[in-house]
Image (cartoon, rainbow, N blue to C red):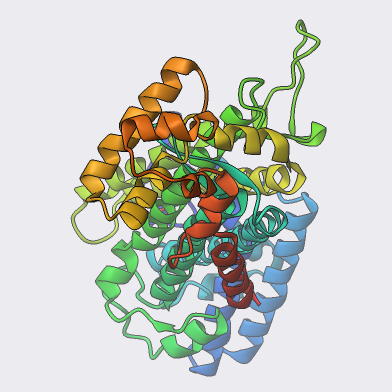
Length: 459
Ligand code: ARG
């Protein structure tokens, strides 16, 4: 038998394979609540505009509420023959209320309907991501506050560079996730225009009120071009783009946690709640959550690339290719939320090992730059010469197997006769970090003012 929604011009029903490749109900049922919200807004508008009667609108409203409760309770029977969530809902509505159900689709198409549903879904997801990012940022702020003046090595090339503070390192991630948050908020603002009423692609001759449906669904305004409204998936791509960058940040932090929790580093101890054991090696405590977060950037970036590929060659307006937008977005959204929650938990629970951090901070000649800077200030040496003198002292310390502060004044003077005892004051890591007071520098005073700034922003 031919399809009850569009079968008028068909003599035969679809092949089973046709039905299988065409159906999206297996995944787009996740948009049921959005679909019903859109239909309720549309029906109320049709009645207000005098396009359907108030009693039909009331029957549709009540019927849709029944459908929603059936879906929520799990008693709804989704049908593959009915393709997608839009037709499943409408067909069930017809079973419940009869003839008025057929009037709901006046002045509307599945093209503007699906664009509306999906936008509402992505918008909800942006809001959820916003909340999860704020929670993660707060967890990082708490770590930064606790260890604002703890010293640790700062790295470039994963080689010891200069001492920094734990608080400063945590705050670097606050900046990254803060930018992710602003990307999410920008995307939400830009996407918040209603496609509903664009109909199939050209608009409609019915006297619909698109401002009314836009407002009912929490959009700022109706989308201004009906062709664009049904063809646009930028909103999903912006979400995936922002999600990809955020996942990349999560992955970098994960990588650090994996390294830091190793026996060789011991910078942090992860909590039992966010670690796993080994079935054979009893001593093992593995950072699996961090590793899985590190891996998830792959599928999120894959979704971004995947949807870009779906969209890039499509002529205006709607093509069925666009049905392939949802699974990738759903998967990316689910995994981003999971990754954010796991990272928040790990960061909240982890213990920075102050002693190991401090011991590492002082090794690897981390205050060599301070020594060179001292030569510039105290001896009025050009920085390039100071660099050279310091390099010789590092080589001397290295050959003796000691650190810079362990060299004697005589050792120092054998390289440059003007060096005085005062040099030792800059060779401690505490003095080194305390001196980095330039704006955005690692000095605890700077870190504390950045923590205060972020607390203000989030308040
Ligand atoms: N299931 C479809 C999708 O997800 C709904 C829109 C169908 N529109 C159409 N003209 N066939 O894109």
